[in-house]
Amino acid sequence: MKANVELIEAGHKDLQLILELQKNSFKDLLDKYKDYDINPGNETIEDIERRFHQPFTDYLLISYLDEPIGAVRIVKHESDKDIRISPVFIIPEYQGRGLSQETFRLIEERYKWVDLFKLDTILEEAKLCYLYEKLGYKKTGHYEKIKENMTIVYYEKEMTKN
Image (cartoon, rainbow, N blue to C red; front, side, top):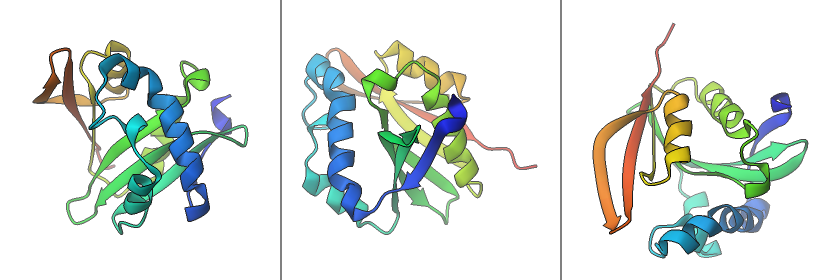
């Protein structure tokens, strides 16, 4: 099953699709936390387009059985040999199938030059924290309280070079 996951470099023609997948993927969290300032589910096509044109950004569609099911934005800091994964998402009907784990394996394979992967999530979302920790990400100790019931937790994963 997981062998059917692919990362496909997004083009300008894919930006509306990315926005739709992103809104679908983050709708439940947006409804739950009502964090309209930072939730990717509240972004506009202009936000996606602006980031798409940044020279340090890659947008990749996550495809499963040739069907787009999500996307990931990679923010590259090549001089520092690190990248930030923000956001990464898979639409709800494909979650819980191990596809996120395969997506992260493909990201690490694609960005072999990276020494440090960074990401963040909502501390109160135990399943997301569990996923990232299972993938080898460690909490940095940096937390950002957004509102009473919502804290952003920052993660990093150091890559060992053979």
